[in-house]
Structures are given as structure tokens and as C-alpha cells.
Amino acid sequence: MNYREVVDDMRDECQTAEDTGLFNTILFNYDGWLNGEKLRVTAQMERSNPVLYRGWMMKPEEYQNLYVELEIRGIHLLTNPEAYANMHLFPNVYPVIKEDTAEMMCFPDGKVDVEMVKQHFNRFMVKDSVKSTKGTEFPAFFDQSVTQEEFDEKMNIFYKYRGNLLTGNICVKEYLDLKRYDEITNEFRVFYANGKILSISRNSKQPGTTNELPLELAEKYCNMKSPFYTIDYAELEDGSWKIIEAGDGGVSGLSPGQDAVAWYRSVYRAFAK
Image (cartoon, rainbow, N blue to C red; front, side, top):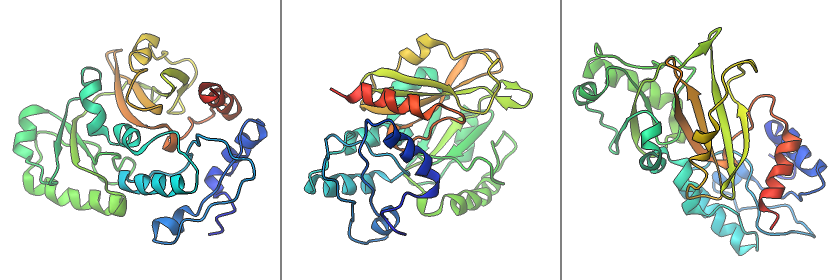
């Protein structure tokens, strides 16, 4: 791909950032570089640091390599590799948010002991350290009826969909019953920047009349070990709220319908100093 052209899925967002008049943009050969090509970046006559990465997910070791190669070129990413891994890998976040998220067990070798898991959870879901396979034929959850043999067979589907994107441990989480409004869950994404809430937005295409995320819960997690990150929250059937995901801010997408202009202006204000 021509590294001087923005990929389709990011083009509108890149244009929005430039249209604010607050940002200069630098492009690089993401696909080629991940496939072993030399890193290539567009030249910028006026480049200010630090630089905010905005693009697709990378494994922590890939992000670290990019960070180092950009440093050599005088481009200093705002989020260092440690901060990226702190929020990108859910097992790293889990100890801090444990009281406000589903209970989780991790299996570094990928060998899940189903009988042991069933002693802890009536129902459970599976993901790696970053993502699940939501929206595929892989089961949304398993219950007490599943056997080790059945589980291992289903995991072949999981590995097929995660493929080269498989990251970190296999994580087993307690399955939560999310509240639904006409079959739509009530999820919110919160961007955090420089120790403060940057934005709170509805994240599951739910109507604007659903219950709001409690502000005190969102404020509780303003000081994670990263300058720029996201946390996703969801309302449960009983009206309580739980954290369902966390991530690095640079690789987290805006919510459907979110005001990108306002968001980029907020990003600038958060880090302008």
C-alpha cells in the first residue's frame, strides 16, 4: 500500500484532525513494516513532539519496536511501550479494576482446565489478553454442561479467528448478563487523557434515552498507568455497572456517532502543555 495515503477506515478521522488546524500528521507503512519492510514515514517540515499514535492495534513487542525506530528518527510517541502494554493487555489492568469487573482466570500456556473453571463460574466466556471472537460462531459463553473435550474442540474456532492476532494468555471471564434495551446493550466508552476524563460516549448504538454511566465510577479510574487510554463500561440486568474492556487510547476507536471534531480538540487541549 502507498504509505503516503491514509487507509480508508482512518481517512475521515485523519482529515478531521487536520481540519481542526491543531495537528500535523505523519503517516507510515503499517502493513509493510509489520511484514518486515523498512519503516518509512512521511517527511514533515514542522514536527512537534510528543506524537500521538492513532491507528490499528499492535502486539506490545511490535509497538515497542515502532517506538524505538521512531525515536531514532526524532519522533517521540506520547505513550511509551510500558504504558501501552499496561492498558492493551487486560491481565495487566485486571488487578487494578478487579472490584468493578467480572472475575477472571488466565492460562498462560493456553491449556484451560474446564473442570476447575466450572468450580468458579456457572457461565464463562473466553478471550485472549486483548480480544474475544464476538460475532462469530464461537460460543458467546459456556455453562456447566460443557466437557473438556467439547471445549477443546470449540477452541479450534477461537484460534482460527484470532490467528496471527492472538496475543498473550487465554483468559476465562465470568459471563455477565448485560441489560438490554430492545435487544441493544447499554455500553459506554470513556477516553482518559493526562489523568482526566476526555470523553464519555454511548458505544453500542443504543438510544440516547438509556441510563447514563455513573460519573463517579468513570472518575474512579482517572489515574491508570498510561497517559492515554480507554475503559468500556456496561449496565447489567440488575442496574449495576461493570467494566467490560480496557485499551490503549491510540488504538481505541471512537464510538458510533461520536463528534470527532470535538474529540480531537479535547485531545489537543489535554496534551497541549
